[in-house]
Length: 79
Image (cartoon, rainbow, N blue to C red):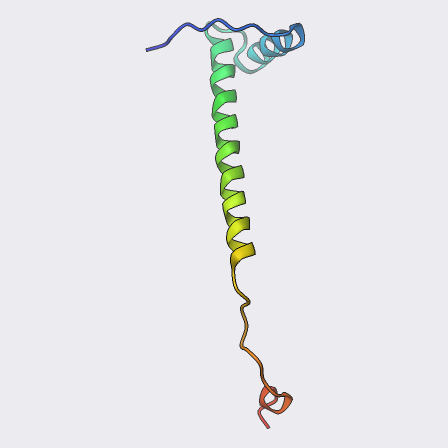
């Protein structure tokens, strides 16, 4: 069920919202709501992606050294 929300936007954002609604949905009924809903989905997706990136960076920074360990030159060339 749709809920009615009242927003206060600066003029430049109001114009931008109306322009996007007209360009993307040809000004049909509910176009402004569609633009706002799509924007909320994008912000939520970006937030999840940023959090996943931060989590990955923490894991990389906390990871130990990976390798085959110390070896002698002769061992590397199987002599």
